[in-house]
Image 1: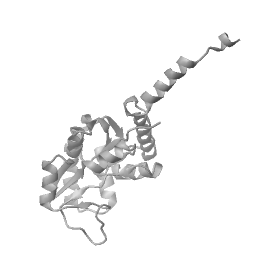
Image 2: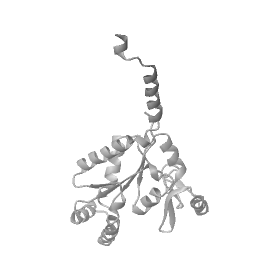
Image 3: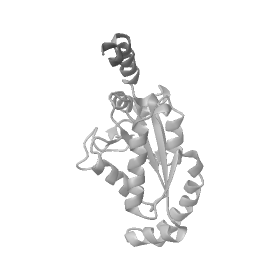
Image 4: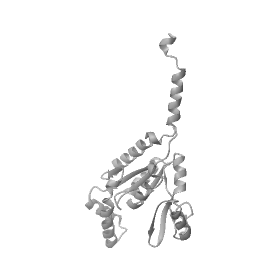
Length: 218
């Protein structure tokens, strides 16, 4: 049955497993796509416009914000980043699901946008703060100062857990992935997302009008 797509927001503090869960979700269902963000920073070697990012001038980006064409946006280290609304809206109308890997601030902007009715927001928590720090240190990618900064930021991010539709505690990656799949499958079946449901029920009513009960035939 035809349906409208989902706008899936996945958020978590760094180290809680959000990126791994997002990757597994798209491996489970390759039709789910990451939303391509726009940015004012210059393309890096090998990056293609429309694949890694939509690259735009600051003037064009600010014009899109002013015209309400951005679902969410933020400035990071002097460059603007954001999610253009038009390609996301087109995907949702076609019944395709879009995945957003954004923080609570971006999620709040998207929920307050004209596409807020399509949002399914999921926050991923670590099983403990000690485990969160252990995962960050286990990566072997960041200095102690960077890890300390990430831990401080995590406290603020975790404080926004109650703003989300669903909260998953990632103490077992396989179980958390299964729960995430269950959320997506259930949300796809919500009555208000099934755009072909009214027509289907009208068809049933039409059948009732022309249906002759078997007892009458016998």
